[in-house]
Amino acid sequence: MKIAPSVLTADFSQLEAELKSIDNADLLHLDIMDGHFVPNISFGPAITKSIQDQTHLPLDIHLMVTDPLQWIPKFALEQTKYITIHVESNHVSETIQAIQKEHIGVGISLKPKTPVRAIIPYLNEVSLILVMTVEPGFGGQSFMEEMMEKVKELVEIRKREGLHFLIEIDGGVNEETIQIAKASGVDISVVGSYLFNQEDRHQLIEVLKCV
Ligand code: DX5
Ligand code: ZN
Image 1 (cartoon, rainbow, N blue to C red):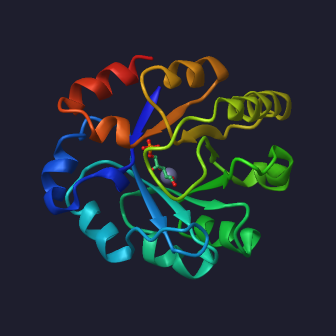
Image 2: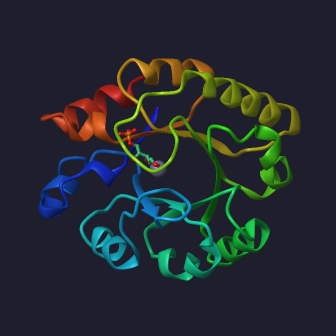
């Protein structure tokens, strides 16, 4: 299992130490929230840039933003591996093209209430599908196991259509729920509060990687 710590729950007053404490992860998941698409505001391009300058990890940027199109150039940094937008946000096709133009992996995410059929038109254009396993906006919520039906459906479609997108889940992942995710076919797990609430994060990441 690839592990992508979400820094949303990190202590931003100790950012350098927090980033060091998880530097054996595969990706760094950055939750960008606009206070409109979700009822919370997190951080923007300036903090994203300073995070990039303090980590070697590829960035997995999750835009929980109503109008992501205008922000793509600001998050298209040297270490940005994926920029994920929500299928529920505005101008999805144009935004996918804008991310492709930056030669960055396109991710598309769906909220818990959004069915898989909503992203079918985009499957050929994306490298990553982010299945939300909590209602987006906050860390520390409980894992919604019923979302594994979407994961299984996506695994089926990927095989049938000969596609190559990776499947990532986001929200409520811990040592138990990651087992359920693995069994369902998840490739990458975002881990936020479960990881940042632990002392020995390097050790926990190694354990989660072996799932
Ligand atoms: C929620 C974010 C998630 C969240 C994960 O809107 O997209 O990445 O930070 O945090 P945990 O692992 O605490 O649910
Ligand atoms: Zn996220």
